[in-house]
Image (cartoon, rainbow, N blue to C red; front, side):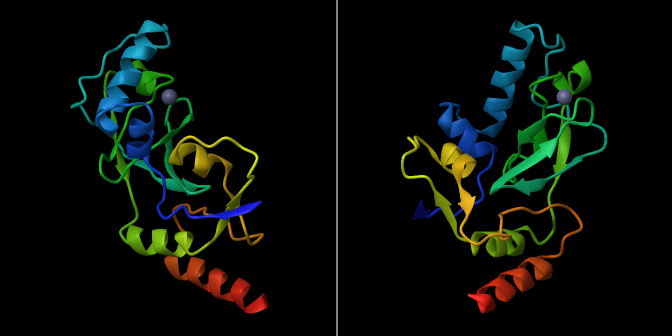
Length: 167
Ligand SMILES: [Zn+2]
């Protein structure tokens, strides 16, 4: 296992870059077309209609995500493009997207998570930052780059300090 530098929480923008899409919104619209083509849903989203209750963002293994309110599928989200459109069900085939709610102290939460070192299996072929985050494992057991609504930044920082003290 090799210690790696992954100095940001991966977002929808990284996914867009991986798939050669201009930005997060372009990626969502691209997935909307794909979903329609594959018969997953039929209502086309214009990239503008954003209505209803926002979905809450979380961090899972160093990646910002949120879950669909209809089918529960997880998707990448981005503070830069805080819009959710479900590539699996088209937000219940509604032809609209939802907002994404990020924590107010997002930067502090990210900093606490990024302080947690990660490692990756050297034998894996890693082609981009999305794959890197996908395969990254916490260097210190118990200090994963995970966060969900309700967990205070202070709690993350305390956990970091506690584990460091034990080393
Ligand atoms: Zn869905």
